[in-house]
Image (cartoon, rainbow, N blue to C red; front, top):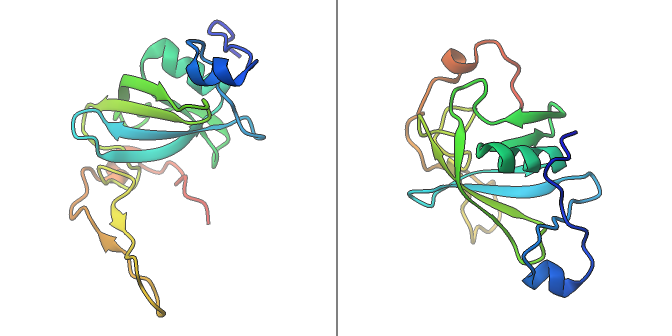
Length: 158
């Protein structure tokens, strides 16, 4: 593991909430949630997780790295597709247990299904009874996933 970017020990609430040291709090699985948005539009592109190495690699390279829970590997976003997420800004929340990435993407898409955003469907609210039907918010895919990924295994797990 790359220890060249050390994280501070969490020693006090004041240090975590008001200090200048990066002291991330990873969960019991060693992960921290990450919300990724388009740096220009503010659109939410995806939600993922990072382990310590993914966070270090993102800081070191300026490109988004995540931990793939389905494949159980460090994942450099765009390494296969070419849709690399270049970090414009990285923020950490008040208690340092969630990360927000603002990114620019050559090719403009983030979703392995081919849509621009992984959040390409809306869920209706205030529904009483019956089934819930999702509404597509993106009408066209930004790319053809078969062309981009070929026969690579789909990361979605049932």
